[in-house]
Image (cartoon, rainbow, N blue to C red; front, side):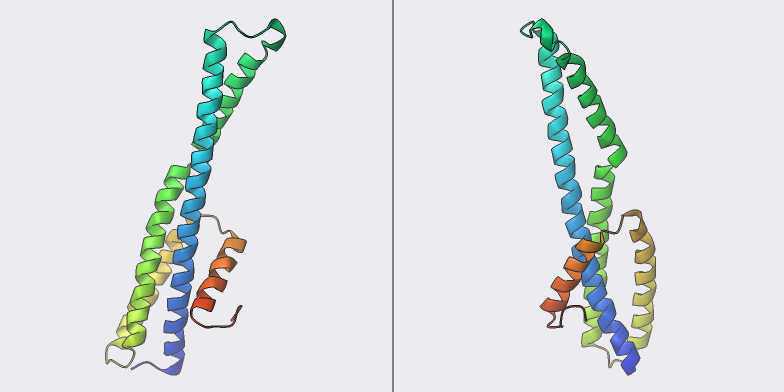
Amino acid sequence: MLSELQRKDVWEGWIGAEIRANYFADMCGRYQSEQKILTWMTLIFSSGAAATFITDWLPHSLQWIRPVLTLVTAALSFLILLQQNQKRITECADLHFRWNRLGNEYKALWDDMYSPDALNKLRGLEEKEAELSKSSTAIPNKKRAMLKWQDHVERQHGLPSGA
């Protein structure tokens, strides 16, 4: 059986895990959109660069377009490489899954908090949460997005905003 303080820890762990699961799902979508935009821009500029090199339809006064399109393509390719969005997408998807699973485990403990082994389960969940928090540091914290999901989850559970 859990004490009042321990029951509060279960509740906060459950809510916190849901917030983080939603946050990382959101970040995954953001990185996917960014990657898609950068990829399309690279395709468009590289196609333009290729078209200007294989045809002679450009007037002499617009010859500067060839190197500009090539440089923009190279810059976009370099940005894609630096951003490492594919890696971040994979990390965010994994973190979403793991935080979501932890939230479900807290929820199960909430429903079974009077069992004799509830305290051991809580300790195990707190250990998982600490480990997961450490794993989450590779993704930058977007405060506005986190607050959005905090508000969403709190409203979903009938809590006043900012509770």
